Length: 395
Image (cartoon, rainbow, N blue to C red; front, top):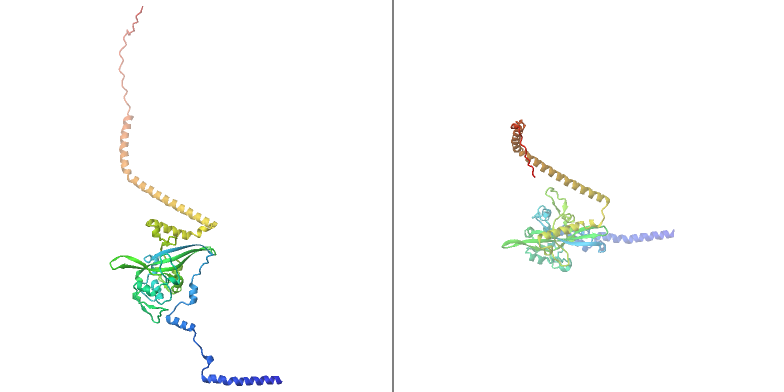
């Protein structure tokens, strides 16, 4: 009982000591424990909100392609393609030329991100691309080199340079092609060939003051891993028959919806297809051969199954039947045309045959008449004395 009383007195004393401190905090309006300091994360979040919708680190990690381990790679081929924007399959990269209802073409998106210093770009080294900090492009030098007007943006600094480029000063109408760097890899884990777009390069087409043929100027390389998170936010039209934008720029490249000629493959001599094959016909055959080997690489590694063999045989037989049917149809048409020609020539033959039949009839009629027997000349009456041969006796 005494212990319980001591515990009760101690609790009352502690409550009496704490109550004045709480009251003082409430009356004073603030205390050291109620102060909340803003950290670096909050300031960076505010900057992102001021700059508009961007790409978080989580988004960047999500859209970054997972590199295949060298131990899992059985085969790899590096391909350079030339995407001409006058090709109907590549027109989604060019249109719209101007910003319409928030729709931008690919080059305007790239230039906006580069000017805001959200994405690094790298030097075009003509077949020896190295995406390291050593070969990063200084944006101001690049803009001066290609005569693009700009002005320093608000908040720009030497360590974090930012620029403002007016929409009219963006040379979007002069970017008429893109270079695409592809990697074809065979992964032994999945036993499949992957086609990965590693980087793209916008190419300016400019003529001199005297006109003539336009000269192509590759500007810089952009890594697709850095660009892909932004491309997922832009929907595009890919077909004139469907005016609903169902695909993004990221889908356009990941699904390989573009079409481009192979202008170079990575080789020891670092030569382009034009240097290896000066003749246009030989170059076209080489490009088709390379493309066919790329598409058929993983298919030639495996023995076809029984179903595939049966399907291939049926397809071959169907093709042979179709060829025979087409040949029979051609022969039928040719024979019908021949019969028509013979029918047109029949009257002349009938006239000739009529005349010949008449002549033959006359000849037969003359032959059919009985011929009069030629009267034999009457023999002279025999003389009584017949001539006899005299035989003289020879002594």
